[in-house]
Image 1 (cartoon, rainbow, N blue to C red):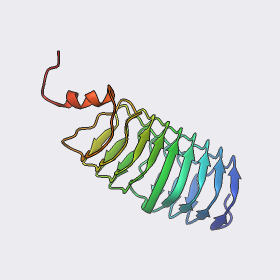
Image 2: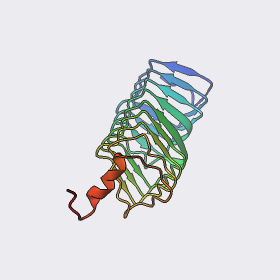
Image 3: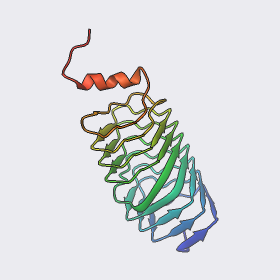
Length: 188
C-alpha cells in the first residue's frame, strides 16, 4: 500500500493497512482510514491529522507522534507506552477507551469531547493537561503529576489525591465529590 518510506503533505483517504514499518509521515492527513489491529513499528508522524479513522487494537512499537491530532476517531485498546519521544497528541471527539498511558510525558495534552472509559494513566506527567467535556468512567490515575490539569467540564473521574499530585488542578462540583468516596468515612 505505502510504496515509499517518506510522505510529505499527502492526503490518504479510505486506506486500510495491517502493517506500517519505518515510514515517515510529515504534515499528512488521514481520512476514514482503517489501521485496526495493525502493527505500527518505527514510524514517525509529525504534524499529522487523523479524521474519522479506526486504529483500535493497533500495536505501537517505537513510533513517534509529534503534534498529531485525532478527530472523530476510534482508538480502542491501545497501549501508547512503547512510543518514543516526542509524544504530543490531541484527541477531539474520539473514543479512546481501554487505552494505556504509562510513563509518558503528556504535559499540556488535550482531550476534548472524548470518551476515555476504562483507561489507565500511570506515572505520567499530565501537568497542565486539559480534559474538556470528557467521560472518564472507570479510568484510573496512579502516581501522576496532575498539577494544574483541568477537569472542570469532565465527568465520572475518580482520582485519588493521595496517589497523584494535584496541586492547583481544576475540578468542579459535583464531580469533585468523588474524592470523598476514597476516604474511609460515611456520608449521610
